[in-house]
Amino acid sequence: MVKGKSWTLKNKFDGKVQTTNFELIEEEISDSLKDGEYLVEALHWTVDPYMRTSEVGRVEAGQPMPGEQISKVIVSKNADHPVGSIVRLYAGWRTHTLVTSDANQRVMKMPELGDLPLSLALGCMGMPGMTAYFGFLELCQPKIGDTVLVNGAAGAVGSLVGQIAKIKGCKVVGCAGTDDKCKWLKELGFDEVFNYKKVDLSEALKAAAPDGFDCFFDNIGADFTATALKHMKLFGRVSICGQISSYNDKAPPKGEYPFMLILGKQLKIEGFIVMRWLPRWAEGEKAMGQWIKEGKIKFKETVYKGFEKMPEAFVGLFDGANTGKAIVSA
Image (cartoon, rainbow, N blue to C red; front, side, top):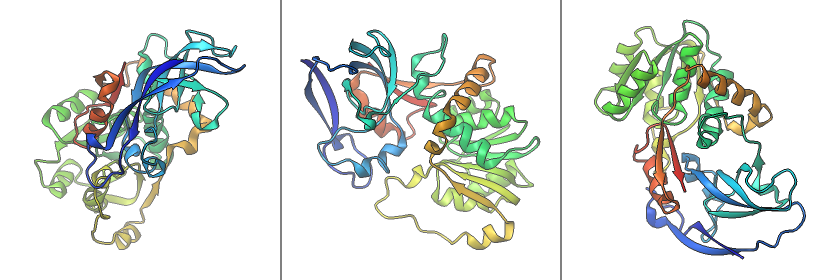
């Protein structure tokens, strides 16, 4: 038997997520494998805002938290995954996992990383990167000379969207919640940046783009979205990626109905779940990898050291503690 650890959901979230919502337990995992099975030990874990909403809604108290990890095979009876090989799988917040034929574990092919850190398979070269790549390019359909607005721009997804927009020849406006994050956005090539906590949002958007925005990639939602829509150009395109400003709210946010505005400006607005493009994952990974090698995409990770830091890292997402991708490493 192998002794592992797992973070479980101790109680359902009620308002703001707390570290007390989680419980660390020990579990014994058999290392007596059947043909085709293999045992892995996690090296890196991801924490992402979606775990607060859609996925956690299907997790009962006492069950492990969901999520992807990068792991090393330590025992194997699987020719495709020998001891020492690296895998990316959906095994949740746990240190050790027995990989079987269970489809819920969802083992995904590792991207071609070369000399890049393995953790990028959970960031630029993983789900956040594909969210930025497909969610922006497929839905916003950017054109050379377009003016693009990205909120939550210093996060794992927003920072990539802004850089992709620059690659495509756009003017990019981004916002973040600290001056240090805004400084980093300028280093990434954003044309205009502002600290949304220090400005009147409508005035800041008008100053950054007097003629309005062609594209808007929305990570925040609620009041920000309602205000930003007023600054869209005719036939503007909006990609709804996240609503992190309201994930901790006990009741849905209230505001003015945007439908007359959408009608008048003839806006195209579409929400998405990135897994719709899973069959094209390799396409996005190849493009992101090439841009990173060419220096066109830069990345930053906020790394928490030690499996015990999982709850802290997760809570930090909603407090703006991370710049770029939040990663927990063994």
